Image (cartoon, rainbow, N blue to C red; front, side):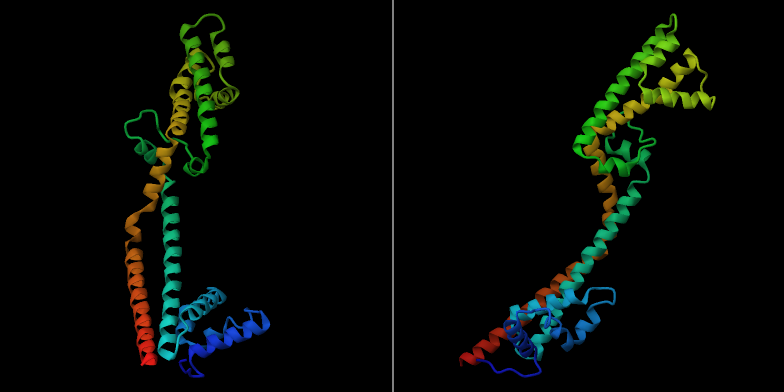
Length: 272
């Protein structure tokens, strides 16, 4: 059996186990390891959860059973590296969220780019954030509604094209309620006259392109979503984080290798 120094981390671990076994209460002793390392004090920032770091450190102490100050220090370094890697993931997530927010601001550029050989995808007045949140069922329903609206719109356009008695009234009744409400807004603002020609121009310039765009946005929802995420990732922003994470991984490997080596040396010493 190896001897232990009363001031070393191994004695801390042993004391922790003894108190835990006697009381069944780990919470009363989980902070012990934190009282014995300057790295702990410097690693955990004021706004971070010291209890979580204490749990991590205690788990590593329990796993590796350090004998002496050197091994205790190495284990504290392992905890510090793992804690910093957690920060990298938080920073990565924050960067991705910022990129996604930026990507959703320009629908008129992003949507046509997502399906470059498709016509009728304007992205005009499209809320990309809302589009991104749609479920597959909602996308399917949106496409059916757009096709229904488009069919009614084209029937109204045909009525106006053929003309005849009450063509304007019949065409207006053919449109869906939402389309008629939208038309009324244009009439009230005097952007189109309330007659055959005005309604025909409104259908050709506003209503039909909108119906086509909504239907195709639903049809190509997966491609648009992929474009949003792809542009939002902005991989160049993650290069520094990736380099830092690689540095932490290498540091972790070196520390662990040193710890294993020390244990091997100690075991050989005791066997001889």
